[in-house]
Image (cartoon, helix red, strand yellow):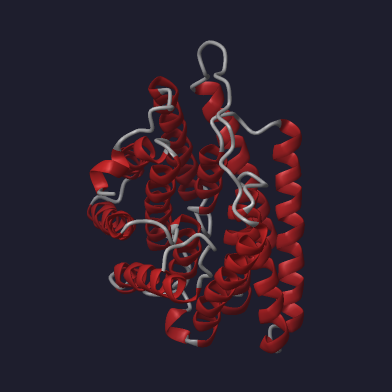
Length: 347
């Protein structure tokens, strides 16, 4: 499948509804990121990233019960991870298996198509928490507060985007769910995916040069959710290109924001880029995963570039495209080598 094929909408998609969904994502990204910058958020990309996950998970807005339940669950998981990281930070042989268990649970839920945006959100949190708690202790506010604010704002952004761009007319009949893969295969794949992600998180914790390379494990997690063993070489190539494109666009956006340090320019950049990616991210299952991954890469790279985290931001930013390429190659190679193959796979 070529890049052009990825861009082609699925015949079952209501184009007008898809356009409104793309506008919702663009609005949530632009408004959420801008608010983060105005409020000097430590990680301004988190709230729009969470809002994007909520919006791309379903065309319908999260219900109040579902949204508040997700926020509460993520807050509790984040607090538990912070407690475990603080308690076991000096005992990695105990901490790392617990992180693997969390990653395995998230990948398993994604493989079984349950939980909506919850597993993707928990993956991000289970990556961010240990990296920040161990490597970036001087954040000015607790990680729990950063996560709670980001998830809550992300949910409000998703609801607000649906309010600004509501669906017109009756909601279409929901399509039949995709057939679930064999339970044993999903379990084995989730176990391997958790180990692949854990290896990258451990590398970031061990190597001080990767202390601010949060984009690597998050990109690996995103790719493991996008990648499928049965995909053609063209689809895999398109996946690599679009994720790298997110990094290149983030680099250009950061350069423009440095040359013209104005909130208005940042807003225009965010709106343009989010419209380009979100317009494709709502066009079907394969396309949505790939372009959604590219938008995720852009948000993280651009967000880390303008964030107040310690470090020489311009110097670090110049290496982050290489980080994305490394993450892409690592995820694809490791999954190709170690993922179990379905019983009906051709040999």
